[in-house]
Image (cartoon, rainbow, N blue to C red):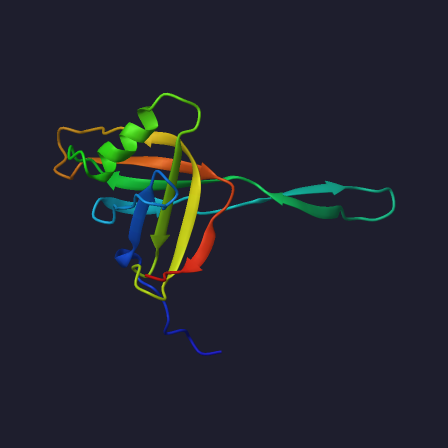
Length: 154
């Protein structure tokens, strides 16, 4: 088989968040997002051994929850990612729900789009170092049951 010519560069992704599962409120945070990590899901497995045989009997079960972590640029603008997500995380209550969708190819009509709605389980506040000139980073993690994939339609 010939080498693919359809590879997608990492640097052109589009990332959006929503506090209402993309019903009415969507915020494009592509300009503040530096990376998406931890996009891996496991399936529960189990095994047993019998007296007759040299290998295990292995079976699969349900998919386990997953954690997806987003690194963002720290800003103090109330309309940008850090302050919007911080406000959701610091809101009292048990259901700290956030929806995130990202399009690896950039979010144009026809591109694939991955969506996850889950608990905003972790928030990374800004840290600093006196000898660094880099912009300050922050971040957040969503824990959810699965990621859905669809084509961008508009």
